[in-house]
Length: 227
Ligand SMILES: [Zn+2]
Image (tube, rainbow, N blue to C red; front, side, top):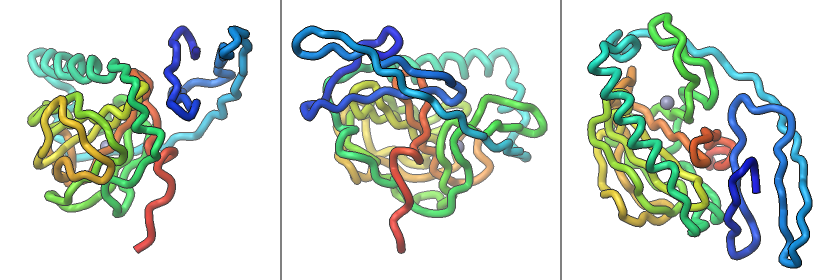
């Protein structure tokens, strides 16, 4: 158990949970043994320094949206958040993660974003600059829990649930090859890179969550494979 959430266990005994960008101190993991004994492990959380990134040239309507657009953004975000609450017994995450595309990293997790001079939420994923149409491969197997072809901020949007509350989200897609409810295997092409929604150019945006907690995909995937 972490906080008040009871964790699932993979067949090999592993379990997963996430720690937020700005969490500090200790995470209390309460473990109950098969014999019914309970003990608590305290895991220290190390803080990280995050960059400040200035993004200029996105349409101002995406930075300071009018009320109708703001309502649309909130509605779309609520649908995405609902998909992230899924809690499946599948442990697809346990097989590890691969890079959905490789290329120049153009944005990292956690950086404070300043759009056209206005500070906005931190960047919640990993960006790799590659041309529109570059195939995107599932980083791990899972079930597609959300597909949106034209969200205001994130354009073509796909969520893949890897089980135990771990999910990936891919934004700004130019093409989507999967439907909600479909299973994808690791490495399977599920769409293509684009620049739809609020984007200054084509790139892969890969975000990951443990339920509502945003986590850094780069910590899970390791270095890019060599050429
Ligand atoms: Zn991004």
